[in-house]
Image 1 (tube, rainbow, N blue to C red):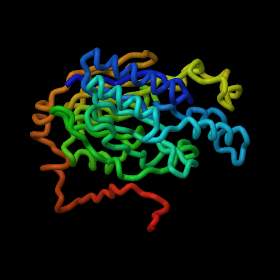
Image 2: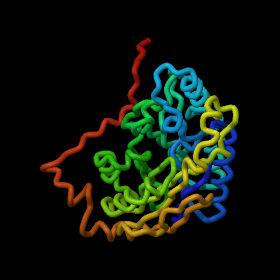
Image 3: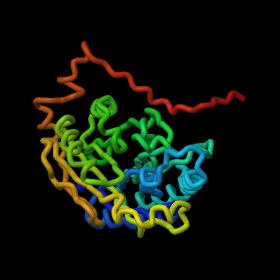
Length: 309
């Protein structure tokens, strides 16, 4: 199977326009022969970049409140028109799609960093809410759960994925290795610094292929209607610079991290190579020692309220 990472920028804060971009790049991936394409973390409708550049931890600040309200309004739901459009594109082009979204909760006051897996036949087959937002992200995103820690079969490949620094969580990785994962998807906001070490590490540890998809973002991608636009207008030219890469089951680069370039990062993968690599190490099989170590994963979708009628 040929796989692709779509290293592109969203139309930041505009979920409808970003959904159109996603459908266009699903088509480009199909035209390039890819059977699977991966988009960056919260690509739809964009990563909350402003927090670290505008003193986002200030309590009860009107500007920060307005920025959050803007982002909350731009967030999407799994049954909304944006995901429906993208699901149709995945079906029409026959491309399995991993898409990072900012998911608005039913409460309408919380956003999750969610990695959605879209099967071209079955539609959305999992929605993994990032179990632990990273550092300043906790000012914007809620903590997720284990519901989406699942792998999926597409062709001869078993694939699973995690969001950003979740990829550094050993138990999250192990929960996917145990499901026979051939290809690991890692989605990132975008930089070589984020992907240059962990991509190869997971590939070598899991004896699997790894596709890291990092995003792009500059001031030109931000709407002037964003409440804190004036505060960031003179900031750095690149907030997110890509870093998309692909590593093989031996931990070596197939495609080294790509920076500051809008493109598809492509590679052909072979599950037989994964099988051979596990001859001497299988982290969830013959090298796992279940008599000594064990892992329990709660895959219930956690909710704050349950109703009994």
